[in-house]
Structure formats: structure tokens, C-alpha cells
Length: 295
Image 1 (cartoon, rainbow, N blue to C red):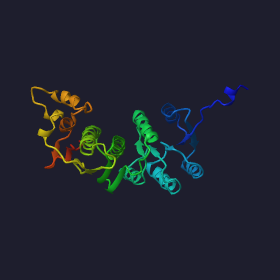
Image 2: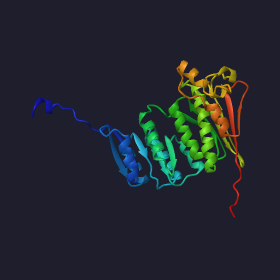
Image 3: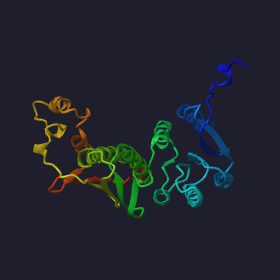
Image 4: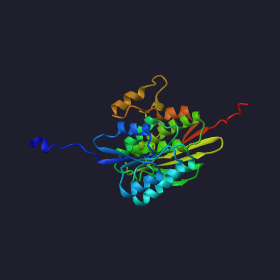
């Protein structure tokens, strides 16, 4: 054997992922997302078998079965936390309620997806889970019921993406309203984290979500000093009528990311966008038209 062959360093798995209840589609997704020379994928037949494996071995990432309920997977997570407090677990389920989502957040699930599951969104979330070095304190529940939830979220993009996925699962809205409220909330949350929190992970935004019978409200408070429309010529909402893209040049000149339509877009998507006096607390209101009986 040559010296070069003898001392050749061959790649070997150094991180492990566990899939509960073998699913070819999920496994194919993991194979695409995870670096093949750095990850080994293991399987467990059900939640009970998964817990036995986890008690013996640490896994860097766990994905639950789509065949179990959100409630069952939260109970699994509670048991895992007793022996592996920092495990990153993503819940996949075909039976979910807002209460299940709340309990998953309380138990610090990394994320939560119910059917139909977007493989693109799940792929992106797995990417965050394997890259993020510290996440346990990213999202804190202040209080929560299925109708009213209050959160604190760290001022960083990855935490924002996790919050958005949880609230998308939590929201019980007609499909059109769910889409428009979600888009408006995303824009306002990113504005708060970028401009109010300055992407400082030591800062937090306050989030409130209320679902009434014919209305949904989202409130976002950031730690910044606030603003007035006269102070943000780099935003699309401040463009004069005869120059609808003036903000683009101003943002480029200031080295800002190529957006700036957040407030303007939110105003188009929901019924009311209301700021407090200082401009660091915003309330989004969307009125829900009652569904008529097709009969």
C-alpha cells in the first residue's frame, strides 16, 4: 500500500438525522438538502421507537411522521426534551389544531408543517435548522390561546422565517385571507427586524395576533426609535405620484437591500395599517367576510 493511500482521509458522516416512519419523499428531500459526506440518515418505525433511539443517541435533526397528529408529536417532543434538551425537531403532521401549534412552540419545536406540505418551504426550513448555531431563545411565548397569541422574537431573519411558518400554521383563515394577511404580516415583521431591531440578535420584536369572528389583527412592536413617512424617502410609500420608483435609487445609494415596498404592499393587502405616534408599533387589520352557504 502506498503512503498516499495509507494516509488518505476519506469522508465520513459526522452529523445524524432521524426520520420517523419511513417516507420516500421526505428522505429524498433530505438527501438533496444535507451534505452527503457529512450526514447519516436513520429511521424509526414510530414515535415510540424514535424515543428509544434518541435516549441512546443524539441526533442533530429529527423529522416526525406525517401519519401522526400534531398532539402526538408534541408529546414526543416533551419526552425528548427530558433527555435531549437541545434537539432540533420539525413536526410534520396530517392532523393539526391551533392548540397543537401553540404547544409545539412552547416545547420549542424548530418548526411545524401540516398537510399539504410545501416541499420548497420544508427544504428551506431544514436548511435553517442545520445552519443555525443557537436557536433555543429565538421565539418566546408571552401568552397564547387559539384566539390570541403574544410572542417575543429575536431580531434576525432566520427567526422571522420560523415565526412566519408557525403563524401560518396557527391561523385558521379562509385561503385568500390567509395568503394576504400572511404576506402583509411578513413585510411588516421584516421591516421591524431590519429598521427597528437593526438585525441585532440581542433585540426582540413583540408580536400579537388576534382572531375574532369577523376580523384578524396583527400587531408588531419593534425596539427602534420609530419613524415618520417624511423620514423614509427610501421606502416606496414615500414616492411622489410622478416618480413611483424613486426609492429604488435612494436605497441603492444608501447600500440598502433592494426592497422598500413593505408598507405600501401591506396597505394594499389588508384593510387597515395603523401606526402609533412614534412609528415603532404597527397594527394590521383584516376584516373577514362571512362564508355564504352555497345552497
